[in-house]
Image (cartoon, rainbow, N blue to C red):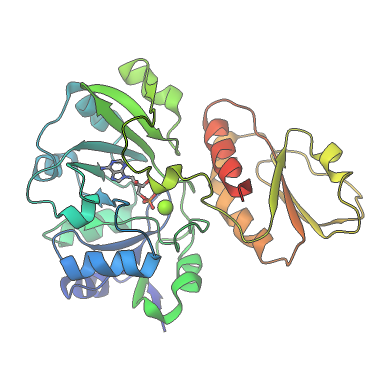
Length: 320
Ligand code: AMP
Ligand code: MG
């Protein structure tokens, strides 16, 4: 049985024995292990069924620990860390030689952030090493936003999930890399790109002409429910093309009344708040996936702020 509780002491004991555990963050739950323990890092890849070339994110307790992890800090990276840590921003920077290749997928860069969750920050305080933690879902599945999601995914393979409640942000961190010290967007996430640009000016989109394997969050089908999912700016129109099917809809603000084929409806933010909608997205997809539907129809969100991130995740959820 997977232990689900909030005992930092128990979490420390397991991690010190090279075991891995589920940890809460403000974005999604992570599958965490000591970055310097090769057995722990190998277990993370094995449990997630994640290819070894896909690097993990290193979680540190404060910006003061950054020089232990990275060898160079461009000025704009420092400005972003100062503005948003602890918070849902991951920086990809040149790694220190001490960071195992297994953590970085053999790259000479490492992804690092300070998570904004009191329980996990208290846990990191008790450890004398940082934690490598990708999202705590099997490769390609919807990320977990509650301790129960993690326990359901890994059953008794995982000794413990540190229970920190429901994730406040509910979508993965935004990942920023650097090209000649200038910021580049690697993955959209729960920090809006507009907020980042207020601090460092224009951020380039990453291009894929550099022959590096794409990050898993960038694979076209990812964050996907098991149920076939479609997306449309006009859900009512798309609904007409499905006859005699059990349909679940995922809507931004206003529900659809009296439709005979809709058996489940998730409204992400009745007040039209994008941050609230983002925080509800994965939990809603998890619930819809449990309804034994023929199809899920999701509404396209306004293409601004976190709406862009939500659309990015929904597009990946609809890919075959
Ligand atoms: P996850 O926590 O499951 O969302 O996975 C971590 C994300 O960080 C993945 O999308 C990784 O590919 C990305 N990542 C980690 N390290 C690097 C790196 N050195 N360069 C580019 N992306 C990275
Ligand atoms: Mg992930």
